[in-house]
Length: 164
Image (cartoon, rainbow, N blue to C red):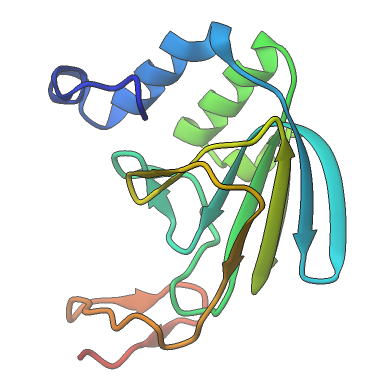
């Protein structure tokens, strides 16, 4: 996110984030992640972590295909470290199929998550950089009132939701 300028966004549109990823590929860091996902503990070498409550990110790229703001869960995607071919696979699956199909991905749906990393990992939270670890995420039901259009349907429950 930090490497993407307004000029790159204007020229590349939603693909600017992929273009930005290619630009920083050589500088990818590996983090030792300790994740507490409700009652499960994972320790893994990782390139990054995505915590989502919606399906798209970074210019409407589908990154969390099972995420729903109505299910009371956070979708946690941990991208394990690897080599250049692994990065190409992750990028292509993100753009053309599903990131969750990659062998490099650990996927969980949880209500609460605590992350610690070595070295300390920086997060981008809706465009704002957060560099405090450990960091905790927790679903707080009803904390945000959302307005949706008349045609909104929760794809996973196949229910029409009331419109505020």
